Every structure is written in C-alpha cells, then in structure tokens.
Length: 152
Length: 116
Image (tube, rainbow over all chains, first blue to last red; front, side, top):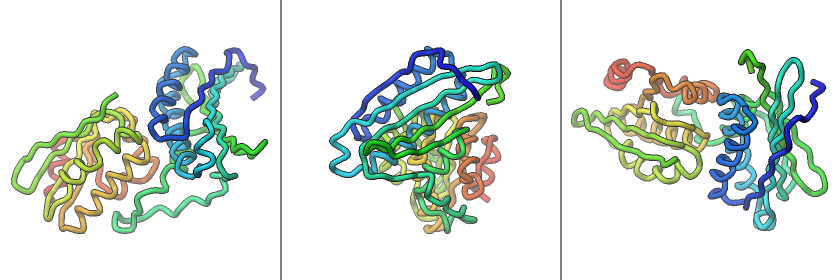
C-alpha cells in the first residue's frame, strides 16, 4: 500500500527485562487507543509484542541486556486500509526469527513440548512481519491491517 | 491487571480451577507454582476455566501444556472451559492447543468431558 503517515510515531525505550514487558504493553495499548486503532488489532499487536519481547530478552545475552530496547509505533492510512506497525530494535546478537523453521505441530499431548509457540503466534496474528540487522541492531517489524468494515 | 487463580473441588478427584487476568510473563509467573500444585495430582480430573483470562501469551499456554501433560502422566485429565472468550479461543486455535487439550465453550460439556 502507498501509505502516508498521518499520525506521529510513538516511541518507548525499555530495559531488556521481563518486568518491562507489561509496561510496554500498557504503552502500546494507550498509544493505539489514542490513534483509534480497533480493539482486535490492538490485541493482535499486543500478542506479537509480548512474544517478540520475550524472545529478545531470552536471547539478548549479558552485553545486550545493558542496552535499552526501543519500540516504535507507526500508523498509516490510505483509501483501502489502515496499518499499524510496531518495530522492536535491540542490541542482541544478530538473530533472524523468521529464518527459524516452524516446528511440526504435535498430534497428541504426549508429543507436545512446552515452548516454541511465540514465533507461531507472531506469524499467526501479524499480517506482515519483517526482520533486518542494521547498524549492529536487530530490527523486527510486525504490522496489522484493517479496514473500516472490520476485516483486518 | 492482576492475575488470579482459585479452585473449587466438585468431588474428591474433580476440581475446577479458575484463572483470571493477564497470562503474560508477569501474570503467568505469579500463578505458576499455585497452578501446578492445584492441577497436578494422581487420577485428578480438572476443568481449567479461562473465561476471565483477558490476555493469553505463549508462556501461559506453556504452563497449561506442562500441567496437562503432568496430569495425564499421573492418570488424570485436563480440559479447558473458555465460554465465549473470543480472544482466548483464537489464541488456542492459532497455536493448535485446542487439538491437544479438549476445549469447550459450554460449562456442562467441559465437566462431562473431564469426567469421561
């Protein structure tokens, strides 16, 4: 879509600590409400944010954990659809989560291994996901799309 | 945004466990030990009521799977009661958990399945 930014970008920096994830969720919810993003799209963004941050914090390592994780929210609209995008920038070792092959789904509870669902949830709930490693930083971007008629 | 867990024993080996609030990292951590202690016992049948869960992240699902497996290994059984909680239903369906742990929108049906 040839989107034009009509709302200012919201930003937040958090420590690479699991205790910060809920603060990030609260920031995202408030920023989305201010921009009149529909509740279902906020929920999808929040799920992706939680899973992505959990992944970043778990794999960031000692050096990266001394850096702040930066979060950006961008919202754009065109005549066909609206789009909200969250970008997570961290200083951990380069890691492309999109390069990880999805695990085969277990057929029974006995086969199920707890864990590994975060990436599946991001892939399921985001309409777009992108990863780049630029200037020694991981940049994971995920977006949700919706229309005024609600078929996001 | 607190996360709470409570239980009611319907009979000696049949327990209802109710969870409310956000099952994100903080919320799941806050109830993890109690959830396991309430759910996992030999031959126990458990209905986990998720109707009041406002947010279900993968760490919450991880706790559910771990306890359901541990319960199964001890001869017990867990089912999920979700009511009309669309957010939780979508997450369980997207991750395929509903195919591993029986999920019901009807309370009576969840009780019946737990005891079957």
